[in-house]
Structure formats: structure tokens, C-alpha cells
Length: 462
Image (cartoon, rainbow, N blue to C red; front, side, top):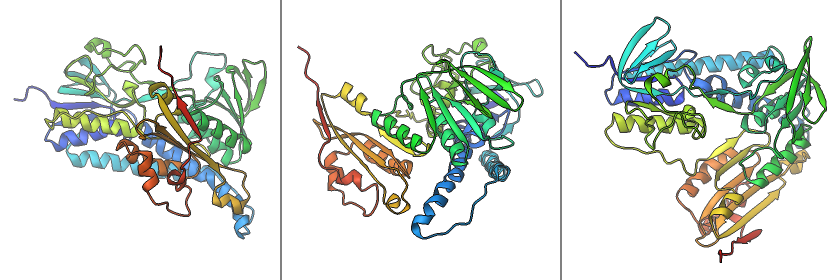
């Protein structure tokens, strides 16, 4: 008789948990995975995928406007929000079914229930109050929207979760936040025709990104009619029938049809039984504390993805889940390298970035060279749209190694994914220079910028 019911019990059916379950099952492990909502997790159900579909849909308006410059006469276009929602729901249902099928094909068993940890080898399924013993437990419960401190009227505020299911497109919307989600939805709603106001507490949006990127994105968004108010926060939200009044810390107020908060996400660690099992929380970020192999403070319990609050990106969770399964069940230690992770903000304009910002590089290296250009994309020369692309390389002036690449403009994410390979391989600026340009493209600027726009030398301390 087996000592445990299963070899691995995974809590959470998102991208990371699913990858871990499938790979572990492929190694011959007996695997059970519990998901209380829908298979696919945040990314598939109410995150990356539906967000990107909304971004694509909202950008159609720009394409229609630009068509005239290329000789097209387009009849007055109309947009139907319920059609968008219905078609999005069909696609998400298809993906959820695919996730479910792939897990089952791997040999892992899915249970539709919330699971809580009873001890280091036991979980309890709340749906039927059944206990399952497992040699290893993997926590992959992800994260959830965080509205911050309670304010009067907080019950009227929606998050990105609800934004995907609104019955109608808001004519006016106030969005608090200055990061990925806030700016992506600002572009989405503006593209579909909403009047958008962004509220952010800091001095500029996209905290943590390169300063040139932050400035460029803000300028471009404001050109599109999006109002961005920085240095203030929402103090109160009043409801008047179907309308809202948002009161700001600077004393002003804004009327709108929806108020959305996108000020961050917190790891989903509550009510999982972590305390009972002795699983430690990282005091710096509130996520489950883990080592380089995603092992928690309890040797039989691991955690991956957003619940650890390390790098909250779906591909990172997938890589961590795969590495966990390789290490524990494939009998070969695999440690995830969290350096040089490319990331994109699907704002409008789009941002793609990998490696160090200029500020980070100057703090770490004595000699830093900057190569930067902004230019009007070829499409805008015909469409007449007032927009510019930003491309920037951060280079170690001593070794010539490319430390970072930052792009703002159409297809920025696609270009950055490829550039990330070069940055990961420690390519030099000379390698970029030796690469023949592909013309006419925007990306050719990355291999034709030859003269530094700035050179920084840090004097050694006396």
C-alpha cells in the first residue's frame, strides 16, 4: 500500500501549476491538481489573454483612422461592446477546455474544489471535506487585485477582474494606478471611445521602468486624449444612481460612469492553512518565502509563480513550475535564472524592455554608454498620426556588453522578445553593429545607432 495517496498535490490550476502537474506526471508521478474557479488561472481567464484581445480590438479604431492616408474611404464604423465580450468569452472557454484536456492527457487528475493545507503532507478539499495525502505539495494560487487601504465608497470600485465582464462600455472612466494593468486598460477604454482619466500617486507612471520610457509613454498617451494626473490619490468615491464622483487628495473631483483601481496585486496566501503547516511568509513582499528551487520553509511544500511575489509574470511561473518538476521528479536540479527577464506593457503605445534601465546600469557600472533615438514610424508619414517611436540601448562602456534594451512603439514586445536572446547571451554593442540592418523596419535602428547619445563615468571613491 502506498504511503501517500498521490506523489504531488498542486493547489491552483493556473499556468504555473498546470505546467508543474503535466511535467511531473510525465515523469511518472501520481498527480492531483485542485482549482476552485476555472482552469487556466489569471492569465488565461482574466489576465494576459483577454487583455491582449481587448488591446487588439481597441487598436482597430486607430487603424480605421489611419486608413484615409493610404487612400481608403471607410464608412462610419460602429462598435458593439456586448459582441466583444461574447466573442472573448468563447475564446476563453476554448482555452480553458484546452488546459483541462492537456492536464488530463498527461495523466494528472483535476478536482474542482478549494484546497487547504492541513499539515506538511495533507490537504483538505472543501467541496466534499475529503483529505488527500501527498508526498509533495505545490502551492500555485497566484495573486489577486489589491485595492489598498479602505476609503469611503471602496465598494463602488471595480478591478480588472470585473472590467472583463462589464455589461456596457463606460462613456467615462477613472482608473487609479500607474503600472501595467492601469495603463493597459486606459488604452483599451480610450481606444473603444471612453473618456479616460488616470490617477497615480507618484510623480510619473510606470515606476521601475527606464525614465525615458516613462516620459515617452506618458507623452504619447496624453496625445491620444487620456488625462494623466500624478502626485495624487483617490480619497473617496460617491455614487449617484449610475454615475460616480471620485474625490482626489488634491481637492478636485471627477465625474464618471466607472471607477477602476489597478494599484497592484497581492499574493493569494490567505486561508490556505500555511500557518498550520508552518510555511513562512516573506516579510518583505507578503508572498510565500522560497529558496532558489522554490522550496518553502517546509521541506515537502513548494511554491511557484505570483504567490511567491518574486516576478509576477506568467512565463516566469511556467518556468518555475517546470524547474520544480524537473528537480523533484526528474531527479536533476534545475534552478531558474531570474535575470534578464523580458517584459511588455501592452499600453498604447506598447512597451518592450529587457535588462537594466539607465539608472540601474549607472548604479552598478562605472562606465555606461547610452544609445537612444526617437523617430516617426513610416506608417505615420502617410497616416498623419502624431506619434513617435523610442528605442534605447544601455551599454557597459568598459566591456561593450549590451545591458538593456527599451522600446516604445508598435510591435515593441515582439522585437524585445528576440533582442532578449542577444542580451541573455551577453552580446556586445559591436555584435549589434556587425548585424546588417533589415530595411525598412523600425527595429533596424537597434543595429544602426553608432554614436552614443550620452556617456556616464562614475568617479572612484577617494
